[in-house]
Structure formats: C-alpha cells, structure tokens
Length: 105
Image (tube, rainbow, N blue to C red):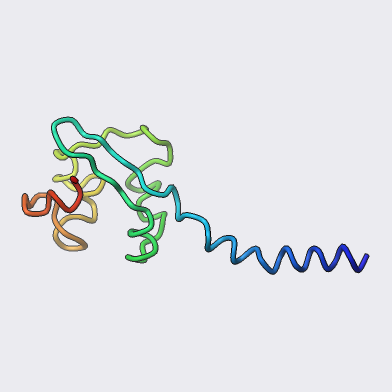
C-alpha cells in the first residue's frame, strides 16, 4: 500500500512539469494560399508571448476542425478570421501592404 502511494505521489509530482513541456495548442500551422507566399501561424506566439486565450479565436473566429473554413484576404480585410484582431487597433492591420511580410514568408 505504501509503495503504491509513493508511486502515485512521484507520478503526480512530475505531471505539472510535463504539461509545460508540451506544445501550446496545435503547434505551428502552415497555410498555403493561392498566388501568395505561405503563412505560418504560431500558437506559441499568440498564446504564450501575447497572452491570448484559445477561446478568443476558437469557437468565435475559427472552428476547431482543420479545413472547416475558407480563409482569404478579402474576408480578413472585412474583419473576419485574422482580421478580427489584425485591424490596426488590437494588432497590426492586414489591410496595410507594408504588413504583408509579417505573415507571408
């Protein structure tokens, strides 16, 4: 009984460390739009560096299923998808051509 308790204690002690070692969310996502350079979206930057919550985008802006939405710049410049935050107020504006290379690499 003491041995089982000790094993459980040791395993549970390291569980929080394991959680920090994992990737945030879905890791990096690469989008390959037609007639433009690829875009790499970093969950790490948005969640860890910028302090945003997953629910700020998921369920409100994006669905959780990959490919369940069709993004394009015309929708973003109207405030959909990334344009919801990248509007020049919350973050850099997707409408400004000077900002294209911030996403398209």
